[in-house]
Image (cartoon, rainbow, N blue to C red; front, side, top):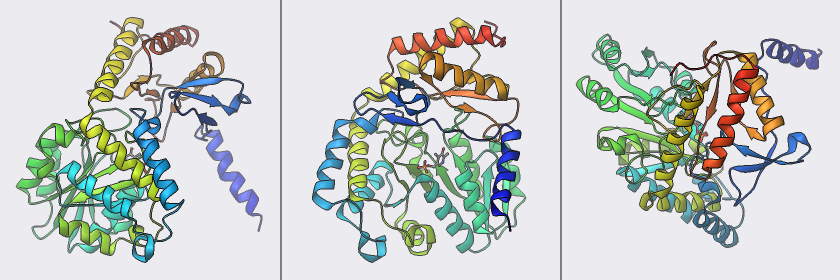
Length: 404
Ligand SMILES: *Cc1c(COP(=O)(O)O)cnc(C)c1O
């Protein structure tokens, strides 16, 4: 059997479709974010990263670094086991207490990543609850889709961010169904935000539980950074809130929060929680420091908002089309996969600007884009330089300008 040929054939197909992924090979500068060394050009120079999910630069925050250094020196490198067999460290317990407090819930459970938390939790709920049906927003993240697939229970899809359609879908379910409504708050690619209140009201009317992914909102929205549900005063009406420690909190790991029994249920039955090594204590301590800081500090969020508004205003002035949305995500629409990749390559090579092209299948064909995520650490000069570069390329590539 020529296995090499089997691998190569599928990779060739991917390349021919223009969907082959090429990674930017970077080395982040602690203290210099959003700058990073670009090893892709032989590390000849620094680039400005414009597409990081380290939305507030917490990955280099002094409180986070201090906590990680101290805990590394105190506890060593790894957790030493699964949570069940010697791996539950004091710093995991403290992190879970911090997360429960953040979301105003009884308890929390940490996972290796946000992806694993969605996959493990949704699959456990769907597989274990009697007559479970997972009712999913049409644009839910891959990690939730995998969780639903693994749950092997019936599922139903409702139109993206459409509470009326959710109402219709829930009405069609059998009376004895255990309904789980799964959705996100901030959607990562369009940056649009779910009408959480309406969704919760529809779910409550049908006696459904709610499963909310706040991955792109935690740290960023709400008075203590707990997300959109906190901002809207709705946390107590959501059954389960899921989040990540790897985006705005700048470290790594995922989690869920909810009632004592719900968390104990997932802790006790989720294979993706039980049979894997716990995250390193230093990572847990770093995440705890990050959450604590963003609970009491608004300055990072405020400056981020200012930078987002500045980027949008300058794009408008230059006639560069971008998707309007109420979040911190600025998708600049190219609407052509080849040009999208080309612009990204030229920005990197000629301008020292790094933004990853987002093409199909991550977004629908014809909506190819560059997804910018301004942080408090980007300067106004960075924004001016970026918009000038985009202006030049828009003319060179004969792309349509937005009509003012
Ligand atoms: C990134 C992402 C996740 C996964 O979180 P990680 O901590 O990166 O694994 C889950 N849900 C959504 C919507 C995401 O964008």
